[in-house]
Length: 146
Image (cartoon, rainbow, N blue to C red; front, side):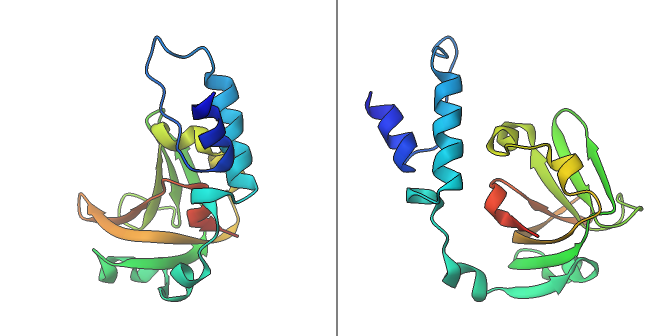
């Protein structure tokens, strides 16, 4: 069961293609445990974090194309079914947002839209522009720290 061993040790990410989904629940649990225990690919890389600029969410638009750590409080969230939006301002359509696509939702062992609401966070990633508004795509739970 080589693929299970790779997931357990943190040296693979989960990809299942129907109809081959017999072990998907086992595989999800193995990936979750590897992340929690920081094995393999999920080991913390401290130097990666310290080289980045810390900015407030209000400044994110000035850092398009750059990898930074954005700090602020999540004041509103929304789950569209296709993506979860973590908003730093009530006027989310004009200000910085962190986005978790549903394809990455399984990586979280909690509901991000509920868990992060009202919390002060730091989000690491590349600032992108979507329809004139800055955002960071969150692909891994480790990109968000409280």
